[in-house]
Image (tube, rainbow, N blue to C red; front, side):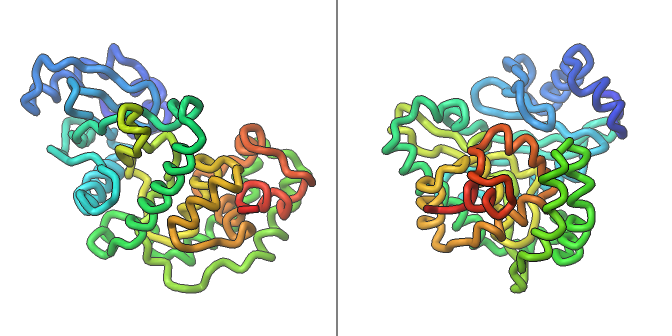
Length: 308
């Protein structure tokens, strides 16, 4: 019922088109025993995701991203019940037609933290930062060994080397201004990244958009979702998204997260990981986050990842 999607052009033509997607999703719901349940597509997300009634979420992965569907189901099953906040429970997962895969999971209680954040009192924001640090610490304490067959990159050092070699080109593609571009090689060469084994289960996008809160329960964290881009690597890599999308350049909030996590990181190290991150987009961050007092990467590291 769903057309095969192997290329970016096919993705652009098929995945956003509900006239194409919806009949296939409805047919899958029938197969899953959910015929007639109200179906509503979430507007955000890198994959097509649907609320199925009030209890379920159905996430689909085309052939081009089928491995991500396998990884998400495996990671969710591995961490189930092992974090301080709920994560989606996997009710079913598998192959559909034309190379598509699906994960049918429980729907988390609450509201998108990114949407709710402006309405949350400062004291509760502080507590959420503490809960976020505790949640990330619990995730990082889990043994990722059972997931090595589905999560990359395998050789963390080789991954970082490859990211380092393409760091400037990736920011050129993002239209970063030349005065920033010319600083990247020297900055990366000046920052010694951790040498210890990189065997930590990483979310890689630990951000407000992937956390839920419940206003009726004093804004408690009620969930962490979206494990499709999970990796196994160095724990500092996860604090890229924390600094950019949880504390968002607020040193007090970041300090609370780190205190609850139980470790600190050199701001220069976290900016280096930012430049090496697979989703790095420095121009966007410069538009959205506090500006540094000086137009240098050294100053930027302190502005976004410093704790005062």
